[in-house]
Length: 167
Image (tube, rainbow, N blue to C red; front, side, top):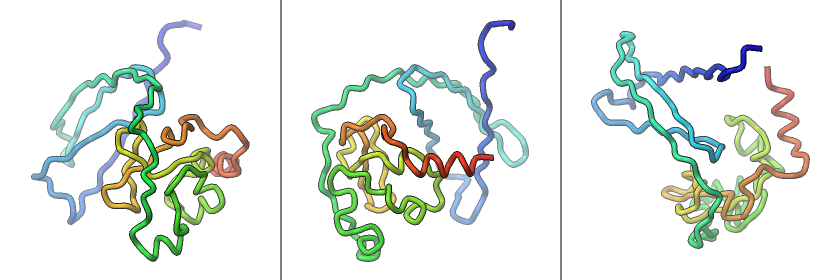
């Protein structure tokens, strides 16, 4: 073997033009990673005419596993009666593996995996892994608020299902 650095993976992400996308408005591009290691990402934005409109390299700093004292469950409740009926009245209000039983029914558009079995709650946005909620406008959820930043330790049936569906 030649040693050296392994090849850098390249990803192409297309953003389809539709009536809701205004080409004159600014948009935010964000990079999310599971690793706590420092990472450098080079990217290029190419328009429909194959013209480079922006090219840059960003460095994502390494992070620690320190969870701030403000990273706690908020006890938020789902505002929509339809959502409460679908997910349950106290879905995400405290730490629990809320998606484990019906992950495929709750989130059919997402790839299934360990996250389905990991404890989480609606939490303060100060959590290092706070994610915008799709069910509570302006709300966030977090795994670290439940002291569970790592994947679920037990065998998760959705991990097996995801591996079975992987081409």
